[in-house]
Image 1 (tube, rainbow, N blue to C red):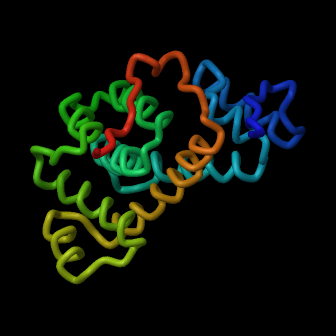
Image 2: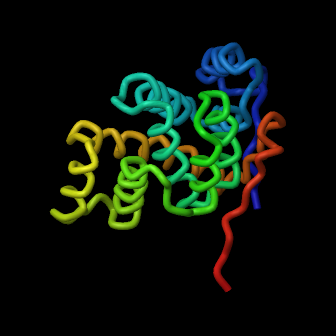
Length: 187
């Protein structure tokens, strides 16, 4: 099997180099995901753009961003993104009980956040086809049509990262290794 290269700034395709320099400045390190994605400058740019839009320009707060990201990461079984977003949630001061429930695929204690988790799961599992009762439950929890579309935005970002990590078997970055995670399989 042909392994994906974890690029350095020097080894990356020319069109990825500036993006990797930017990533290194932003994170104080070069995330392995970005180093792998550098193989395709367009994919790296798309991922970084979607991440910025989802994390900075949506109507979701830090807890809600975490719910959407981790629900998708866990559902997709991403060995890299679950630990990374656990660390990110800690840095965003998200209640660790929320993060642990998401990692363990348990319902959330907060009804509104649980409605967001449920809607996100339905988007993934039903390929975006939601029933009237699904939509009603989401809106009745206090969410909007804008936020429903923003779940799709977050999912778009996570498809790029989760699927890349599946095929590249991207190593978890050192700062997140203490949050290592594997999806439990049902026997």
